Image (cartoon, rainbow, N blue to C red; front, side, top):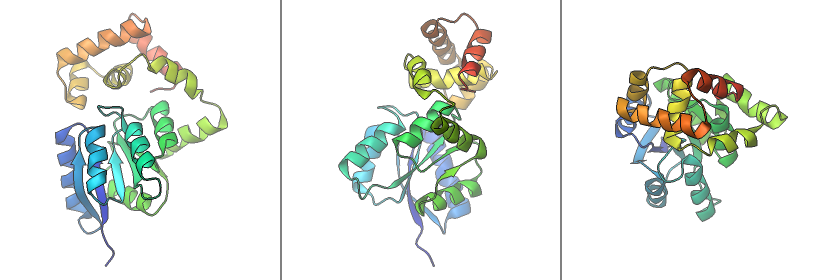
Length: 220
């Protein structure tokens, strides 16, 4: 019998971490073992100093610098013994996918993935494979072919906080405030506050303009 893949789950939502742990225990108990959890960059780095981990299931947007900062700090400390990283995010925006892969992740899947699919993705990444959905793989190919100008997109998005980016994408896709609140585990009032900040920082005046802005930059 093969040894289970040891996994660290990193996400700032406790309910989501619990859901991932339960799902993996239900469908992949023999092949995947969640050995620890972390809610932010510092916790993730500390957990990796304590636990022997094969794969880090990593959210892109985290308090303390995001998933890319986790990868940077871990690799700076232990280049040869660093685990493999698999991004698991609500975002399927091109700049998040490309930036995360450039940061060192071996794969990128969204939170719409099923339990069995996630188990398979973790196994493949642990073996050294790269794992993407067809749409996300297309972003990576486009970036390296030069058809996506990532630097220009990043310059605009640098004005927004990580949470504002999440709200921006969902609103631009047509989500109602109530739906955004449910998706991100925040209050409707907080969504309204973030939305006002996004429009102000990007110098836009309406949801319609925001949708066009995001569509022009292939962020949807």
